Each structure stands twice: as structure tokens, then as C-alpha cells.
Length: 321
Ligand SMILES: O=C(O)CCC(=O)C1=CC=C[C@@H](O)[C@@H]1C(=O)O
Ligand SMILES: [Mg+2]
View 1 (spheres, rainbow, N blue to C red):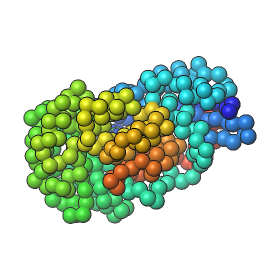
View 2: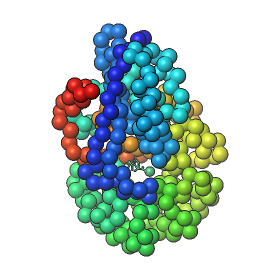
View 3: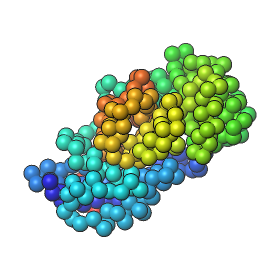
View 4: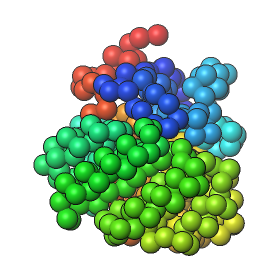
């Protein structure tokens, strides 16, 4: 199969900067790719890297796209190197039959439940209720951003105001020390099982410590940055991780290799957004609908992280050069 290939750089400003232990993220940069096959069918893909999670940078992805010929084949697509996981995801998912169709980005796959992302710090206290009104029952709150005693106080206020049926996830983005992680896990155990998990409490190089912690407390630990791509996932699985796995399809690499891994091994997966457009979102949610386990809510809550795009944003993008 031969495809006519073209691409466009696309960036969106977060309405509120995404603040995590990694820092302040203000602009989401992406590359939208378009493939037209021999039957003139058009399909779309999205390259949305997160280099501080270990994926390629937007510049490396752009350099890759610039060096591609205007007509590409499936061989070229399936030969994209593993050091370009966001490109692997975009090109492979755009060759899927029944790929992306332009439709409302409010697309919510019927058989998935969604987690709403709360902002770091005390503004989480007045944000959760309008998400609750929209039907979210699972929330995720960033920690490891402010001073720990301040965050523990906010946590007490947050957990006591959330409805009993709500679930709360904490995400430290690897920002806690071992002692701080024990403090948080001890605190969360007091509210077990309301705290679904603590995501990436320690940095990627502290795998053994996270394994130790996962045997000492009730509250589960989820790996995210530690398993950002297929190689890291295989390595943590081989080293015996059987806790929760947060998978970000947009930066993970080849969707078919992820499906293959999940066929071989029953792992407890939570799917997570990379703050992509509806193109990457649809491709990711198709994977989540197939591979989600344990009815875990997917971290794709529509929290309007960006200004609403006009309906024909894609056509107008292709008019620009
Ligand atoms: O997983 C979710 O609930 C939403 C997505 C999300 O939290 C993240 C997406 C991308 C980078 C990070 O800021 C953050 C994460 O660490 O999971
Ligand atoms: Mg995370």
C-alpha cells in the first residue's frame, strides 16, 4: 500500500498551564499527519511527544517527517525506529482501517469511564464539583508540586469533601522522596480504598524502592514515567512489577506491539492522555476500549485543557504551509 504523505506542525496553548513536578507546561506542540491511500481514502494521525517522559522531542519528530518522501509505504511506517515512539503511534494508527473520523471532540467511547484531572494545589478543592456534575466519579490530583505539609492539608480537605462513591488518584510525577512517599501512602491507607492509587511516587531510577513500597501499604502504586514506552514496560514487567501500569498510547510506540504485549500478559492497565487533539484521542480510546482492564477509568477526561477548536480546524490547518 502506497500513501501520499503530508504533515503540519500544530500547537495549542493550555488555558491554564499544566503544573507538575516536571515543571510548568504552557504549550502543547504536535504534528498532524495525513495519509491518502491508493483508493483516495484520507486518514489522519497525531504525533504528540512528551520528551520529559522519554519520548522524542517535537524537533526530532519534525526532522523525521521532513526527511520522509511524499509517498510512503507500510514498510517505511513499520520501520520507524523505537527512539521515535510518538511517530510510531501516529503513523501506525493512521493506517488503521476505520481510522480517525472528524467528529465532535466530546467523543466518549460508550464502554469507558473517565477520570477528571484536578489542578495541583488548593484550586482542586473548588474544581472537583463541576466535574462531578458532569458525571465524573474518578479524579486525579497532582502532588509533589507544593510543600508536602501544605499538600497533606489540602488532601484532608479534598478527601473529606468528595462524595463517598468518588475515587481519587494521586500523581506525584516522580517528585517525592522515599520518606515523603511513605507519608503519603500511610495517609492514603487511612482512607483505603477511596484512594485508587498513587502514580509514580518516586523517580524512574527508584524502581526497587517502589516495589518495596508496593508491598508495605494497602494503597496501590501505579507506574507511569517508568513505563512510558514498550521497552520500559517490558523491563519493569520482567523485573516483576505486577501493580498498576499507566499507559500513554500517544508516546508508547506501536499500537500493535502494545496489543501483542497485552495478549501475552494480563496487566492492570490505566490508559492516560498526552493532552492530544481529537485525532490522537480517538486512536488512543480505540486501544483503551480494547485493552482496558478492571474497569479502570481512563485518564481522558474532557476538562477543556485548550480553547475549543473551530469545527474545521483540520481543513484550515491544511490550507497553511
Ligand atoms: O492521566 C490522566 O488522568 C490525565 C493525563 C495526565 O495526568 C498527564 C498527561 C501527561 C503528562 C502529565 O502531566 C500527566 C501524567 O503524569 O500522567
Ligand atoms: Mg502520571
